[in-house]
Amino acid sequence: MLRPAEEADIDPLVAQWNRIIRDTTITFTNLEKTPESLRAMIAERRRAGREFFVARVGDAVGFATYDQFRGGPGYAHAMEHTILLAPDLWGKGAGRALMARIEDHARAGGAHTLFAGVSGENEAGIAFHRRMGFDTEFRYPEAGRKFGRWLDLVLMMKRLG
Image (tube, one colour):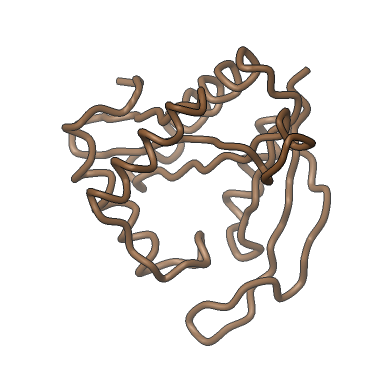
């Protein structure tokens, strides 16, 4: 099932996102999400005309969302997305469906480009974005740090227009 996030999704999404934060370098942050912070993020995105989509199959949950790439009017047509899936959803089309929904929504809202900031250690994430039509624009060496290691950031982009 693929749809905009609802209140019933908050706790499973927070649990899944926090597992990724705690256990992986998919995201560089170590600051865990709370139900309140996720509710606020979803509301803020919706006020800005963006969306937060959820894919759920049984207990497995994934999401994709997007917002403006950088602040200011010059970046009004450049968006950056986040997509995270429970391992049970990998390879089953949920990621492709979420990305298609995000791209359509962003395009309808006037977005011209969609960016992905992917951990250099996340080879599966880089490969997924390539399959979705993203190009690697730049690799920033040692841009972040987590678990006592320096991490590269791979910036990828897809033109929507």
